[in-house]
Image (cartoon, rainbow, N blue to C red; front, side):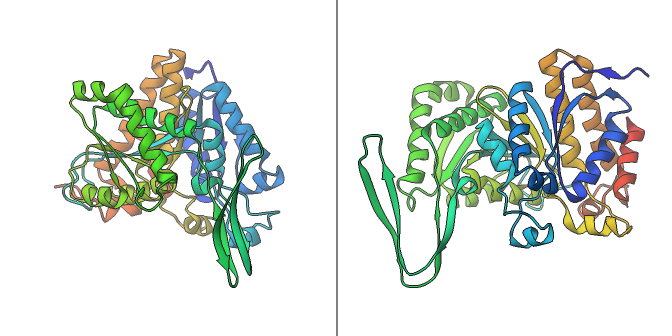
Length: 399
């Protein structure tokens, strides 16, 4: 069989631990036998990020802007324990945060629905899409230790005028953190959410906590409201969908008792947390798609979960693992489909569809990784637990 040819490379961002192992297997078993794969490769593994002083992450993001489509493996964001474990120069920031800052996009995360795996919340009948702002907040925060004394927030305008506000007068040791965002990025986030909701014909719910963060979160609320009234209200009414703003605790309560079928727009940190909650409630963190979309039409596909550290240490000891690769496969299929659409290669987009169908049918036939066995309920089919590589090989048989 002749392999499908590609015109333009994907930007390939490799990652860490067990997902790095799966990354290579996915290419070898599911993609390279069928696609003449062209990528511009960047190693975003923690060792190489430390070696390059994280310049490799910036280079990968800039390459994504040039080529338009990227696929990213899960990566470690180091804490103090990881700094010691890997003997790092410093506690490097989240590579996802760095890429998102450079691309200034919105992350859309949606569950992968498979017949036989019912959500933990019985009322959820339709997908809940998390739209996560991908710039600023805690991911670009400046933080540090404090001792006895005053911590102050200081702003100096272009004319040299200084405004100072007391954060806290410390009587002893503590910590302090300063976050920021920009109106430009919030506006891009709002338009991305409104456009996505219109494309999907889904209502859009946006939530912050402006009753507490009156200025910071209040700016998000105000910008969304202004853009909706000026640019999208008539379009939403014509499409028969609603836009609603409310507090995040209210949306959590509404989401739990809803049937799904909604786009839930969240600030950066909220989206990070809530996407994991939604993914788990639908069945597994490894069963969720994630794509970063920039205002100028750049796409970066990634797995929405971590690097599966526990399985990785079993793997390097030679022990059996049954790690779920579905989100990582869908990152590849999403990127290949988009590359095919952009380059007019119908066969490449069709291959991506076929790959996703093969994944679903493999699970629906009863062959799956260990995390799904306890969730699977389908009359007449007894689920069978497969090892990490065995599951990929079972998918390949259906391709």
